[in-house]
Image (cartoon, rainbow, N blue to C red; front, side, top):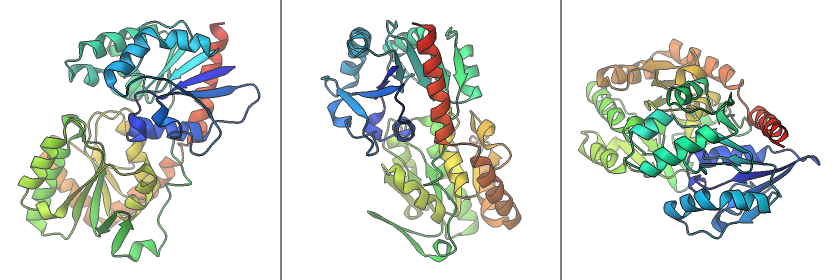
Length: 376
């Protein structure tokens, strides 16, 4: 069996989808019965291989959203046939898909599609992705929440399988006693003074709730004069301007640090140096950032929304992201309640062990084999 893996739509590795693809390919098995081949822009030839010897087919397409969409609309099927793929895995299934599949197609969906459609005026996205997801041979949903959302969105794909994202436990693990006593976290090119709170999320849209978090943090600081800083680590996006304005307008602006793009491999150290993870996003389909924070033993507070309750269980402190007062109180509690911090830390580590990229990759390959077998 020959599997084509689409790398288009993964932001050249600088997003959650990019991390997903890199983590998945890192665990691909060496199997004489299965051949894997990545395809996409030449610039990504080595982005997702992690040093492994994985074949890559370069596509001569301008590095633009329009050009990549047109290629998927008119060329991906003929390309897949020419490459003799038995099945294609569309990693960015809610961004890049053909309308119809001449080569069996499996679409990965990590996003909440109803939010995606409601928050865009992009008619191509709505029509092409809706039709493509409905016609795909199978959809891999990152959570039961995403699966339910797809069904409510009138996506009529016959097969929707839930496969949760994994965690790289070789990267994300609790801190050592030595790390806990350092005053500054030195992650080039940053030197971040402790204590600090961390929110790792791209500044993509209003549902990420960066602005509300800044307001809640400001209220917390004004009431307590706590030494804590707020570190927001994530790439610029459509919501960046609003986040920067909110940070500058805060009375504690000097204690708010926006890092911009932050390499995924450096997040474990960032988490281990933090006092707590505050995650207010309400449109998470996978909840991977919360799980990674939990895996390091970091006490975590997050919105009770999207897939977060499904993946985190009772091992986080929940709050309403639209209630600034409630979020501010949650920040105070998770910093000062030592008994709660111990419970969340221990429970988070245990819960995170239920997720691994080995398991995710194994289950994904089983789906690919099933679809390839049924369609040939």
